[in-house]
Length: 248
Image (cartoon, rainbow, N blue to C red; front, side, top):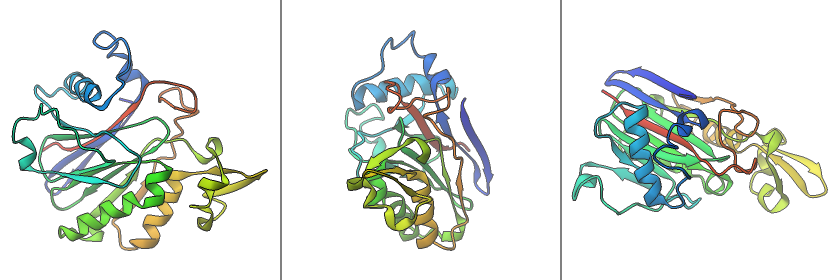
């Protein structure tokens, strides 16, 4: 798989990563075209997980993503009525304390954020575009974890592949949300155009607000320039699948 981590923690292993073009292209025999809605993406991801992650019956949870700051808990009650329920939440963040439950968000320039506890069962994943970042979806997820009793020190964050600031041009309407973070995050090009690094914006905001976090990492992997990943700004229709789960 293009980008994958398997971390040993006190309660077992946490696995997370991003599947890009090479992994997704293997799905062409089942889906000759990319899904157009959240329900079909759910079906698609289940088939992909069965192939790539080698689970006989993966418990998959994904979202109808809306570029906001809504987050959802995946608990035991989620399984009522079966994991094949047609109900798919609207939102951009998922978290769970359940084992072997695959949380997935889709990206094609936006930032995937992986979050987990190093001490007790807790995994989360976030889809954060500039809108979700301006609304503070990652900070909201951290706050939720703290409300549940997890300490800052045990929480680990990693920012996965996304379009880097060198290739993400925005206008002043978007830049106004981020200019206070400095030119490293939002660089003025002139003529009301700016280069925005959304992943770095998340990193700086999180570090400023939660100064005792156990770790904040940024892969600095540019989906726009890498042949391994899909990019919307490169006019590609596919989506990168970002996942996290507590394996064992």
